[in-house]
Image 1 (cartoon, rainbow, N blue to C red):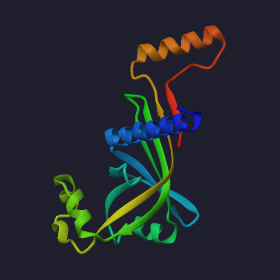
Image 2 (cartoon, rainbow, N blue to C red; image 1 turned 90 degrees about the vertical axis):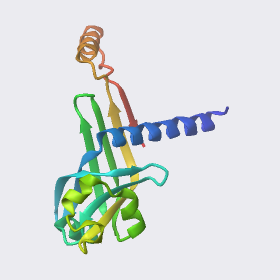
Image 3 (cartoon, helix red, strand yellow; image 1 turned 180 degrees about the vertical axis):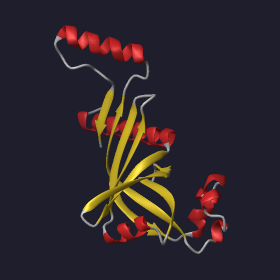
Image 4 (spheres, one colour; image 1 turned 30 degrees about the horizontal axis):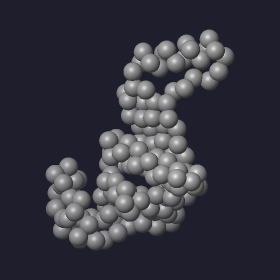
Length: 167
């Protein structure tokens, strides 16, 4: 295997890990551009790794829908401090009105937000085409974290607090 194909494999594995972290954490803080300010709100998404997308249900009349129509650049930050797993994805968002996709992603949790069901006239999907991402996945054990900090201090180097990948 040449170095280039090794890099491709490693990059593919890093993307797989990123998507697994997103799937496990599920709820992230989605940030949109609101005029000249940034606005974040919690959103529970559905990862589509093969397509490089994250899907959310939203209301087409929501403030965030208007923000996305004005500026499609978004970020979603996921965090699980207990497991020391963190993910940041950036991309371009778009509103989608696709009944087949609604049927595919629909679940009882979503129905709580849309009491009129799948036929709610205000129901829309928000799709983020992921362009860049980064994750940090550290040791969940507090003892391991403490040991690595002490070890680094004694050795006069930065602590190894887990894996970090920019994609």
